[in-house]
Length: 237
Figure 1: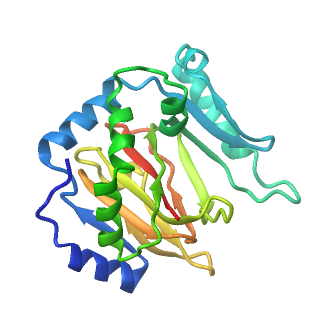
Figure 2 (figure 1 turned 30 degrees about the horizontal axis):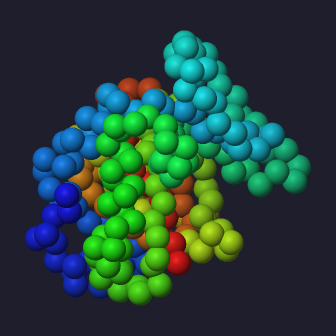
């Protein structure tokens, strides 16, 4: 599944220097195509959102019957709910499939994502992740599938979660031909509030960065011609 021709020393040095990297050609071509098909056609998506009442999930059965107008209103209301006194402003709305939870609950038998989660936590892949990052502390990897559609977003946060032991966040990008003005950009934000770097969700790339790091996924524009598809999660100690 993983491209064995990657120059791991080069990418490891990029991570050491910059705290982040975007590895091109991460998967073998056939594996990337099969995963994209799974995300585009086979996943029973739920809606993950965080509004003024906190984070919640709208289940697949409820979410799948919303009209486009209803969904867009929900996304807009979630975004507009920030700004009250004492509110941290962290908001998100995107489609999600929580791979670990679904695997543990034995939901959706036969879904390819279950095999992906097993691969990510196999001894060989964990050894590969340690070699890629140069970090021997990595012990397990969690994952969720994500789909960003027009009107969806992930606002500024830093991914820090001390109890979970997050070392690195990753995004395996599986959208073809994504254009910068479609939004959905992974943007790294400094302490001064300025954008320091931007990763386009380019086809078959692995974006990876050390945690904590301020970042956001910009609002997907109404003219985007595709869904922003990915598998994302954290490498954990």
